[in-house]
Length: 312
Image (cartoon, rainbow, N blue to C red; front, top):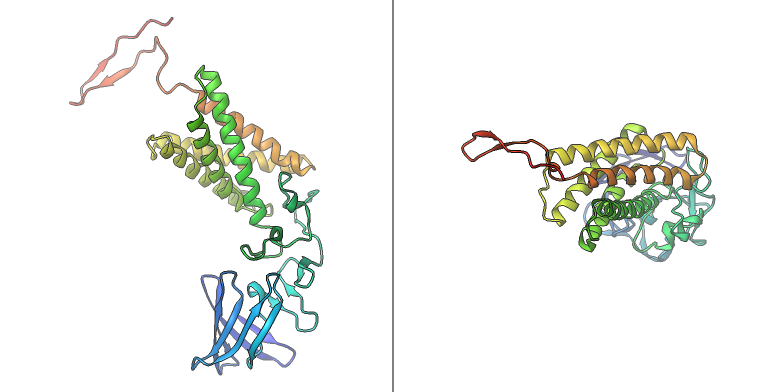
């Protein structure tokens, strides 16, 4: 990536590895190496010979606490975002952030009209549209100025866990079986995983992206649940059902987003429908009902007709 430094036309070229800035070549001359922490904040910069030219400690919210060395000044600081030298504000793409306030200058927004963008109504922290990463700057980062993927993954995890557990409970009731706490827990874990994967598709993602992640999430979540229950993981029929359910869920959500104005309703409608579909799938009998004629093959591959058992 190339960038112009100030109004002088001074050109910088940056090298990225795994999304992290690791080096800078200044005007096709000296090369500088960046050493970031777990948040991506460059706390140390060295020149090509290994001599430190920038060394600083940071406050939790992104301000420079103490600058020990600063002979190669640069503007990419807190979590690798560019800092405006005049205002001290960091540019996150969608919004500007000010570390002295620990807040964004403007509220979060979404390209899709919604009452409270990226909000999880079960988590009050997400209702503050000015806050930075749910007030947990030591462990989390904001990728682009939106509460994404933090909020969308959190919402997906919560909705998926609840839907999975509820579907298992209803299915066991419909089958007339006693409630199995272990299976309900495994259903919640599988649903949470499926919801988390689906949550990586932000509200501004296209339908194909949402459908792909939703289908993939359902496959991963369903496989995880079967593994926890000691069942066959790579069950072709179940995997196909999971994929179809995921794609259908994305379509239902797409329709809900165009139909309803309330964020809660947009999320609730797909969750209810998906829970009903999951319940139907779980409540189907694993074996043919009594009175059904089936074909049975022995170990030699010989197929015989099994005598049907009269239905009650």
